[in-house]
Figure 1: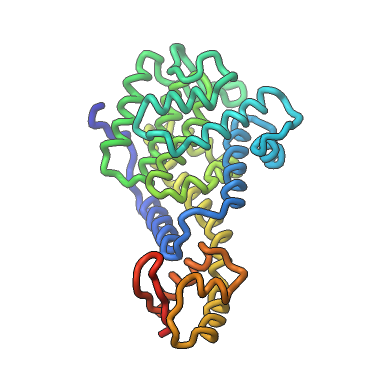
Figure 2 (figure 1 turned 90 degrees about the horizontal axis):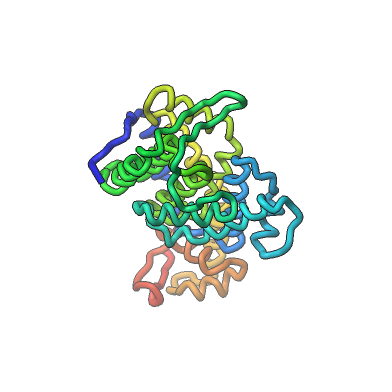
Length: 322
């Protein structure tokens, strides 16, 4: 792998989006929200899979994807059912994939495109172009160049000191430009950006960025095409970061209402404990409607707001009202 940097420019708009994403991630971390509850995780996984496949023309609804997710029979075209099953398996393995490894990239393609193409898990050996209607909108590099181009791109991803948020967008664009596989490039490109983001912050494994891309599909392709014409990925980086930010805001709006009413729960605890110290389990006995993670978020938020002081560590942690 050589030291390689794809062409792009870091604009004020890009840095603003990066700062907003970092701020929102910091807020979620301060409230100890590291992943959603199991029900929301499942819902978001279904949205991720449905969105990414819908971009490629799969007609399955969220309900149909959910049925397959649950291992139940569903009516539909065999090819579309296979696409959903493959995507469910591939996304379930995301924590096992190495974002810098060609071997992992090929394995992900093998799983995602199994039964759908002749040579899943293999780089293309022929020419490929992207049609927009009846016109060719993009002609990918020659097949003989693909191994070297992918090697360069993975090298950039691994060795560059650029922010991971930005590298994830750069990789997404450059991967689509190279188009290293006969088919399935869009699905893999979106999967790999999610993989890169989840290594930057694990919470991204549970955020359906692909769903937001689907909802803004026309703009997605316009941003890709604009970068093709200009010869760099600047516009796509800016567009994609705003999609990530929008997805993160949606996620936080779902997760944070639990915390948003924590004042009434904390006040209830204050009346009960007064100046006596207490532990999380004591808090949960008083505020019986909350889960353990929500109780932890309540107490962390109260400490941050200097309503409580805490002492001890982990299981021995105690709290006292100021």
